[in-house]
Length: 73
Image 1 (cartoon, one colour):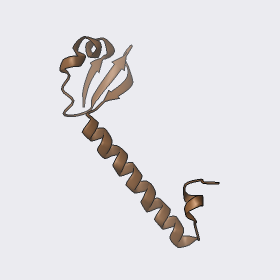
Image 2 (cartoon, helix red, strand yellow):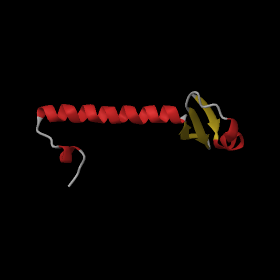
Image 3 (cartoon, helix red, strand yellow):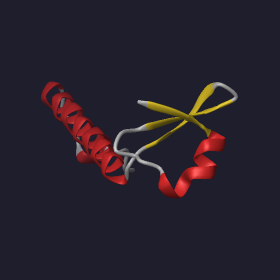
Image 4 (cartoon, one colour):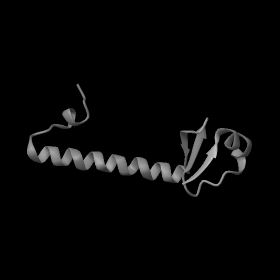
């Protein structure tokens, strides 16, 4: 993962290469991660799938309604 400063990102935002995530630091500490939209969407889809698998596993061990699974009153 490439690392750059906030100042660098501000000055070069229009030509950043985000083929891989970019770690952005401020005052020497990690502050942000910049990634492509495609990578972000893949990450969100993966998290959603893992949540569904977790719910499926829970429903096997005990009866879990759809309302309970999604905290619907």
